[in-house]
Every structure is written in structure tokens, then in C-alpha cells.
Length: 302
Image (tube, rainbow, N blue to C red; front, top):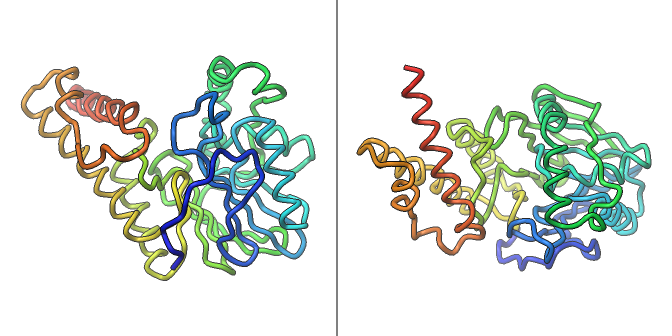
């Protein structure tokens, strides 16, 4: 098992990558919110180098970022990028796709993720332009992947055999887990946030916990888990994430049962055990609101 005392790098201006196994690397992104200071480079980007080519796992936050990642991956691995796999339809993972599309490199994702990219990523792009500036986002455009899968699959690309696992609707309807068969390294994307509060906006808690159980089984087998955010780790970090999902859901349930108003619930659902996690202040309150409103909708539907 990989040691979990990883030190996070500064935002990837694509210079360095961490080695996880033979031909397997990760650029560790910032764990904070997207901001001018980190150029939107939040979240981890992986790549796997085979005898004939390189597969990227996620594409970065802008055309500039994607181009830097592409150049760095090819320089480090010595093989051309032949495929990009998008694990979730999140701006930090998909907005770099234009850099790869310009080279004719195909993009693969789950069908549900492609649908969400097409439906909402123009709005994400507008928001990033407003946040980061037109110059930072120059040339960035929404690319909807055309290579789609609907469930678990095993592919061969660039000389590496990759297991693609769709655990159901966890953090998003089209979650993909990417496991390199040769090394056993697993890229979990946004299903796993280590020492960082996860965003529940697109999530379904029951499915998310089931997805974490699949990841825990891989971790127990000795595979390194690369989260979408934070340093690579294993079972302990997954357990902490699962506990947060349980704790926030239970606390919102308690408050909802007492007929607490939403504004009261957001304040009263503070969970001090997670104050040290990245993004606690901006995201935890949004998670509480999401779960509270979901309970209201379920009550109205009954």
C-alpha cells in the first residue's frame, strides 16, 4: 500500500507528476475552490503510460491547463496521448478537453456524464470566464465526448489494460472508476475526496456509499486509491469520507424531524470533526441545504 503521507503539490502548471506505479502518474491539484490564485486547477489528473501510448484520466480545467498536462504527460512518459477518460462531468475535469480534441485524441466517458456535459457545461464555462478571466480561459470550449459506455467495461488502450467500473449513481449519475490492471492503481475521481468536504449537489448518498464499498474492496486487495481531491490513500481515508456522508445525513435528519427551518438547520448542522477539511466553510452548508430540500421534496411526493 502506498504511504498516505503525500505532500500536495501547488497547482499543476504541469511541471511535476507523482509516480504511483510502473507507468502510472498523478498530477495533484489544489483541494480548494477554483480561484484565480490556483487558476482553476483543482482536482487530480492521472495518466497511464503503455508501450504504444498514454491514457489521461480527466483533462483539466481549461484549454491552457489541458495543453500543459498533455505536453507534460508526453514528455514524462515518452508516448503520445491516445485517449482521455472523463470520470465525472465536473468543470475541473472536463474543460481541458479542447486541447486534446485539437489533436484528434478521443474522449471517453459514461453516457450519463456526456449528457450532463452537453446540458450544463456552457454555464460552467461562463462561470469560469467570470471567475478566472477571459485570458485564462482563452480557447476553452465545451467538448461532448463521443466514445461512450453504459456500464462496467475493460478496454485496452496504448498497451495498457484498463478496468472501467460504473458503480451506479454515487457522486454523479455517470461515475467512472478507472483501474489500471497491471499496477492495480485505482483512479476514483470525485467519488473520493480525502481531507476535503465532498460536493453532494449531484450525489445520491445510498449509491455513493455503495460505490465507496467497491473502492474499499479494491483498497483491501492492496490497490492504491487516487481520489479526485487530496493525496492518494486507502481504506482509512475512504472510511473517513463514508463517515462524513453518514454524519451529515444523520444530522440533517435529526433537524428535519424537529421541524427546524432551513436557515436554522444550516447553522445547527455544524460538524466540528470536519472543520480541518478543505472547503468546509463553503461546501458543508450547501450540503446541508441539499439534503434538507431533498427531504422536503420526498415529503411532498408522499
